[in-house]
Length: 116
Image (cartoon, rainbow, N blue to C red; front, side):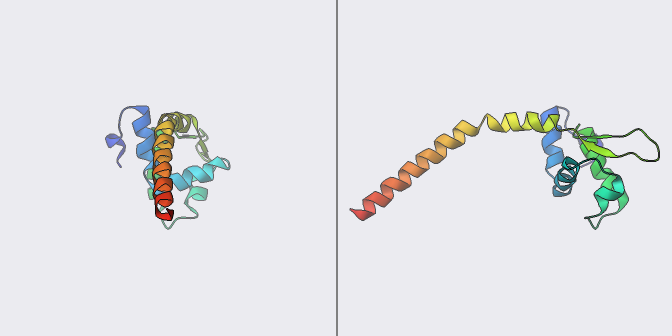
């Protein structure tokens, strides 16, 4: 995803950034502490340029901030957008509980009917 193609609202930017498994892995690494581009690149068979592009998408989504030292610009996780995404997903929790509860009841009735 190109930066100029990023959605404009925060929730959309968050989910767009999370859509890529490399970016999710980078966020998981940053959850353990700040890291340089080189450290973020270690587990991937990608160029520094590719890692930098992923990092730019994460920054544009507000999920990562970078240090200001020109020589050493560590990236660090900013989890606030993740919290907002979690709240949005949580709004559907009752729907899934109700749906799965209904499915469980239906399957239980089917099993009981087979035993009769």
